[in-house]
Amino acid sequence: MSQFLHGEQGAVLVASQLTSCAPTFNAKLYAASQTFDEARHVEAFNKYIQTRTKLMYPVGNELKSILDKILTDERWDLKFIGMQIIIEGLALAAFQSSRDLTPDPVLKDMLGLIIRDEARHVTFGINYLEEFVETLTEEEKEERAQFAYEACWLSRERLCIK
Ligand SMILES: [Fe+2]
Ligand SMILES: [Fe+2]
Image (cartoon, rainbow, N blue to C red):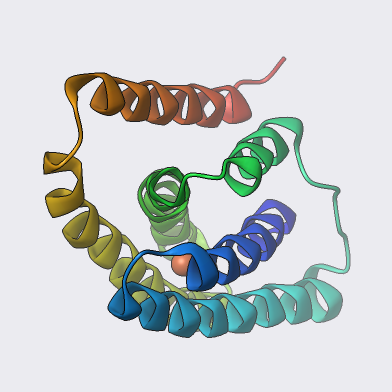
């Protein structure tokens, strides 16, 4: 639950960066509305932790590295790939399995509502990037693929018990 909260805090920051650096007005508007969604998710997880679990862990190293990588890269499309596709795709799967497994009806409802928002974010990311990627050179595409690969690798490490 704490890592969900930290991921959502990262999402607020990335979405707000995209509001300023996305290349088209539509994408900026979309990122602005996503910033508001992510702020609501932060509030929901934070309140859930404060009132129900009452135990908060710091951000895990791998999640922090992925978020730092996305937040510090200046290329807007890498932020889109990292956040909208890798992190949110992963979050969507993690939220769905938590919703299916939890016996708590409050958490089930809360995750159901958040999943609805995240599914919209992932879909927008994929649709928006599809056309853009076609305009890139082979070398630029390879850089993006490498970035996505590293983010997936870090995500896998996040789940390995050391
Ligand atoms: Fe979110
Ligand atoms: Fe999201």
